[in-house]
Image 1 (tube, rainbow, N blue to C red):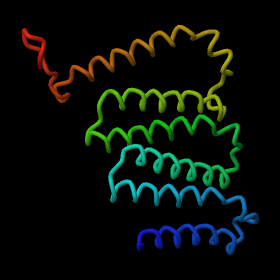
Image 2 (spheres, one colour):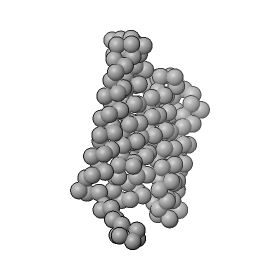
Image 3 (spheres, rainbow, N blue to C red):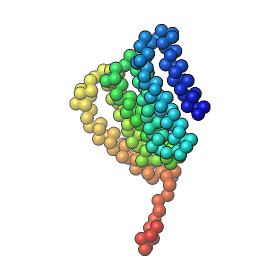
Image 4 (cartoon, rainbow, N blue to C red):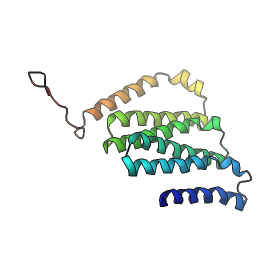
Length: 178
């Protein structure tokens, strides 16, 4: 109960502070703070009660998405501009889920997470006009990089699966039993 009260007070204070200082003239635009609070409470319940990895994913995704929306409000970013950042949030949430499920990152969570984060960074470069060429110009000239990136990702998944840190695989005996 103390944690929930702390989250509610933090969200209310963060919501009201820009209003009283004049930094935010429209307090209704800070509604994503509710997502941050709900994500924090969801994550807390997931970590203290039953430690369900799906709830860790949901709480992380909800909280980070709310933070991203609040940040975009203060920085003046449009929703159509920040969509690649949600891919990064998805990748980070998958990392949290993978870490909570097996207490270490396995290839089955690490590779998709890094792919989502990498794609988010790639598309964000075009969404925020950080590159001198447009996305279509880039794709016309560099489309073979898709094969290189795909091959590197598959090689990474193979290498992680063969890692000495990976759990040993069970071998079957002559009778087919493990």
